[in-house]
Picture 1 (tube, rainbow, N blue to C red):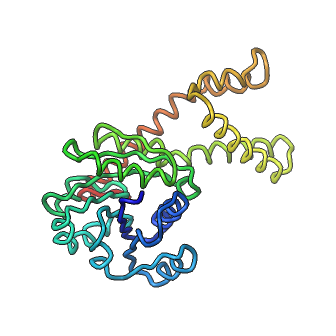
Picture 2 (tube, rainbow, N blue to C red):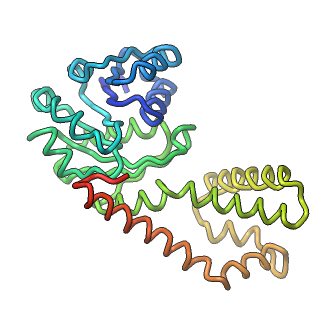
Picture 3 (cartoon, helix red, strand yellow):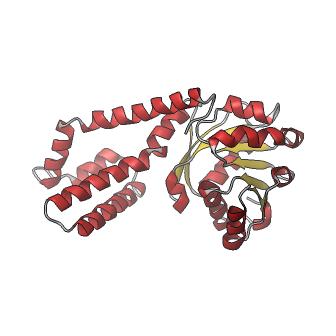
Length: 277
């Protein structure tokens, strides 16, 4: 990452997670500049990560060849517009992790000639175990794509998608997805408690099972059906549970949930003129 001069605009949870991940992956503190309006957030960066931050976004981006936009979606336009001249002069690439803010809006705020890439990370990025969907317009050059991938790989895996619309599905699947797994784990813990386990024991078992299943899947070849079958002995307890879920329409229910999240994300983006959340 020695060729990247990075600016992060916004030092909230995801901005700090990216900075921490990059430092762990060998980026030097002097390669990173931060624009952040909140004094407390600037102090936290200095104290915990040794990164100097400024309230002056224009000063922060002046030497950058990549800017990560990590502000709230509703603030994206007001942050980018004053920086357009600097971004155009240096043709500085912009990597946006502002959920739901469309490429068209980002390019209008940045100005002509500024490469723009969108990223949709998920919350496990905060612990270095995230997965990020990335989209770049067809005319984005390979070096910009490579820089974007390197940045997001510092907090987990990356997956490129072919269309911007696919990012709405990424948001519904992996962006919102942790909540689905937490809901399942919560329901399992409640069921265990209802069947006589102490609630704390049921909770610990549920959380550890969620964690362990994720590790097994991550370390596998990705064949989820095979992994499920390996746990499901014919005529056993797991088969009884899985059959109950399938008979109740479990797969169809999950499909409807992901579809609803995708649809709602697109509605919110349209309502807000290019932003959601």
